[in-house]
Amino acid sequence: MDKTVELVTKLVMEALRTGDTSKSSSNNLSANNSNEGFMVPVGVSARHIHLTQEDIETLYGKGYQLTKKKELMGGQFAANETVTIVGLKLRAIENVRILGPARKESQVEVSMTDAVKLGIKAPVRDSGDIKGSAPIAIVGPKGVLYLKEGCIIAKRHIHMSPEDAQKAGVKDGDIVSVKVDNERGTTFNEVKIRVHETFTTEMHLDTDEANAAKIQCGQLVRIIK
Ligand SMILES: [Zn+2]
Image (cartoon, rainbow, N blue to C red; front, side, top):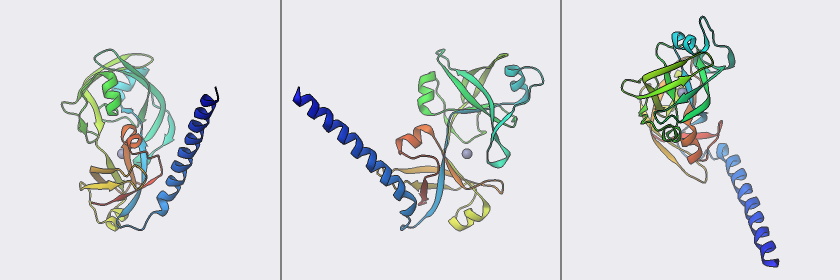
């Protein structure tokens, strides 16, 4: 009996200690700026979908217009509307956020974990490059849509303003490496630089990448090239 109490106490103490460690480490992140390399904040992209106006109307009804929940960079917005996505094995993921405005082609962006759950072979691609990507079904309140292609895992990338790109010594289309200075110490390779005057500087990772590197929205990472 005493032994059990002792063991539980030890576990609780361990949990508290670990919690403290992670807290102090994330606080140090922005201060740990002594090494070379341009620092950028991270934005974690949850699974989401871009739709054509035609596909919005298939899912939500004739003449339907998306409504804004939150403004994003580059004139995009997170819509209040969500859909359910269904893979070939009829496994579904609910509450997938629609990003507006309507696009020329519909596209679903998921994590690798999502792709495994859905039973689909989604390739890693730049946003908009959907040729030959995975098929997926989409369910809305007023209808269902089947995309023969369009489901991808987004290639990790950094949005940059032209000024920041110049300061960092990179240009649109460059591929760089990025280091995360925390206790996981992850380095991400194959990170694409995307420069546009409507962009605020931010690195976009999906939920798998962020969780594996133990990084959250707003934390700073270093471009090491
Ligand atoms: Zn992005």
